[in-house]
Image 1 (cartoon, helix red, strand yellow):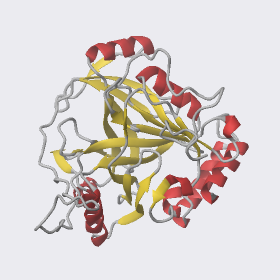
Image 2 (image 1 turned 135 degrees about the horizontal axis):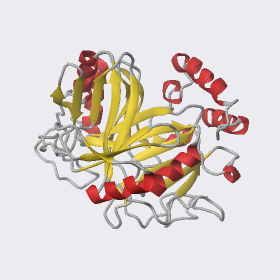
Image 3 (image 1 turned 90 degrees about the horizontal axis):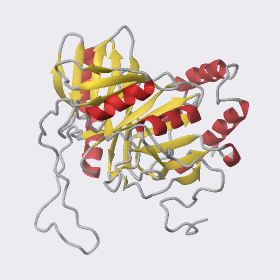
Image 4 (image 1 turned 90 degrees about the vertical axis):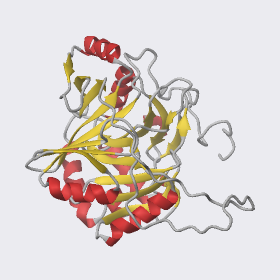
Length: 373
């Protein structure tokens, strides 16, 4: 297949009857992801990991913690004290408050003010998977902070660094911004269409379970539609699975050295690397995945693809070996097949199969093939 679609970013394009990957007339077109929200029982422990991972603290109270990157904008992550650790929602940034009013009218919602420390307004929605979604506008932008300067690199015979050494410090990688979130859904197609139709997002790449191309996609990498302006390959990724849940989130750092040295810093402090370092296929990012103390998966990334609205979706089989161009083999921890995750995964499957949703026995067979391929 290689080279048969040389004008695409994927070796395979769509065939007749495939999902188009975009809505004909979306309600609005969001500009970006804004922040993620979690409950945490121990905010002190959560902040210690966050600082080691490379966040800055923008606001701290007895029951709430806001984490930011070095880019200007809203905080990346909002943590609230809760009796257990859980993902509680996602916020996307609209172009303006007129878009909020349009979205509210279409969805039967209302435009509400956000708290004074955040500023602006929001529309609160819930996607078909039950994930709380805020769409916000007019929020206060935090000022830009100093970031890590990418190292000058000699490439082949092209010498741009001479009479100078490279000494990247083994220090926390300074997170620049929130790049994307990955969710799993038992109602994958319904949820996918909801984001395309209401928020105007468009699909960059589809993955299908091995041997199940005719049943349509089982995962999608979805970007913001900014017209001719470039956007991240994916701001949201969604996968069909046995539960409606957060999978991981990704935060940009300056370059490979920041990512690698930051990983050494985390490892030296006893934190658990789930998978990395490597380079993805869909999105092309350099990646390094870590578990926070509560078990949530977070990613450092650098050098991701940027697309405008002219590129159509690529199609590829969903395989474990196809998740990276290079790097160590995908880990059982990342796939949920390690002893620490297998029991919870099995319970999710047992709960999902009797219910009326898109995750049926045939899709379970396809998912099991992913981990073995």
